Length: 78
Image (cartoon, rainbow, N blue to C red):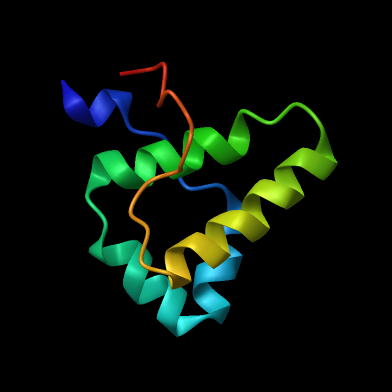
């Protein structure tokens, strides 16, 4: 079932969306699978620095209208 394969939004990402209404609107406009891919891409980083870079890139990409992480094979949990 699809719901079982969806990731929960981490607290740090929730905080970003709660403090930025434009990003929250964009985030809410994504399909559940697209949100899942962003979450998995961010949380799959092994180092804190990499995660921070991915979060910053996610914010920039969402502002540009990108719907999914670029140059990534996709969530392996599908």
